[in-house]
Length: 371
Image (tube, rainbow, N blue to C red; front, side, top):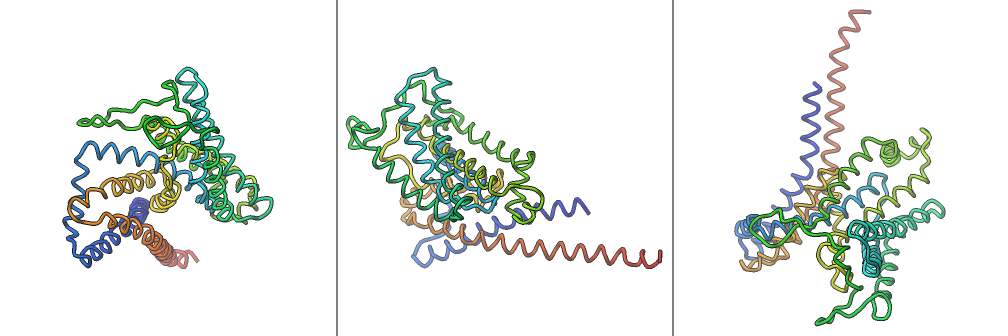
């Protein structure tokens, strides 16, 4: 019986994302057929990209940033907090960390550590504002974090100007912070043969964040309180959990991880924060956290899937297929995964009820015999 229940639990956990992906493939195929394109050609072209070393490196690099963004969102989700402000948190953190990194010269480990520490601190403080507003004034974190995104955008735009934190880039119309010296740069990892491109060195940090996230949730009192508060706030209060403190701590932790989102790009590729720095990663993290069901392993697979879809979309245009088909697929995945999880949840409840009914029916004759 325990083995069967374990297999059922694993099957149900995998069923929702599989159903969502299958449904998205079906909808995308219908759209392609209606628009006069061959879905088999489109999907084959996308799969062929997996064999190219350069694309493999790009997928791993994109997945690294996606994973960090999704973990930041998932920390809030575990407590029923919707940190919509990851986008503003990581951009503000990356800009200020880049400014600090370009202004100092330290030995390599200390320089890199300082930049990362500044990014995590800025991200945590910016997210902490929403946490404090929620526990002191009852302001919804959804509203406050969205507004903080706009404020962060304004601050970045104000500071990213010549005469403040930005300098002009020679030979380009782009402006950005002062370049980070070599002592503050993280070298790439040549782990994919057949290409000169390298995987971000901070992929190691993303892996450590995933391990730390798993350990925090499953092996610490804080993680238990976090999950208990998210499952039932009244029950958590009855068991002695200080919900207000947990809200602030969760937002601080979520913001600290959000501060890391821009670090792989900053320290491994661009070495300064400019007008061309990636945006929108926070909202991508929301979709990936939903698809991965806030699980560290599930988020990893979801991040790789999302990175594959993003990096293979450009190849569709060479086959005459609009790359917007990938956007349709991603959108349908997000919408259908929520429905799929709800269907699986209802099936699990009915399945557990049936198992309990069978056990009660099996033990009833024994109890009557004893009586």
